[in-house]
Image (cartoon, rainbow, N blue to C red; front, side):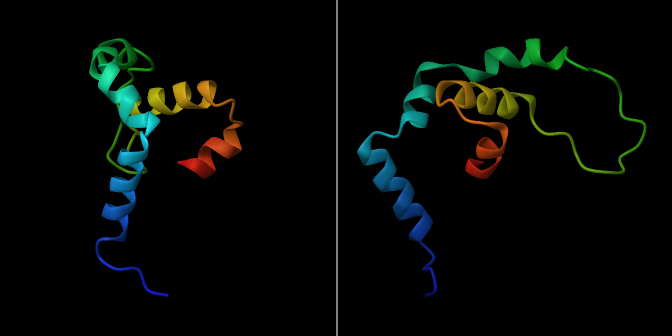
Length: 81
């Protein structure tokens, strides 16, 4: 079965209509206010541009919050992401 171009968009629309908890969290929490605090963690300079690019610290913080709220193991969080 082949997915259509708008399957993902329609799925997100259905989640929004059902009351997606991630949208509610984003509406209540200003995640960007944590960026200055999170940027102080391990602020060493990269020696070169080789290798994998660093993951956004705010995104990682969001994932840790969701992991704690939903009582997920590291493996389960990785699968959900």
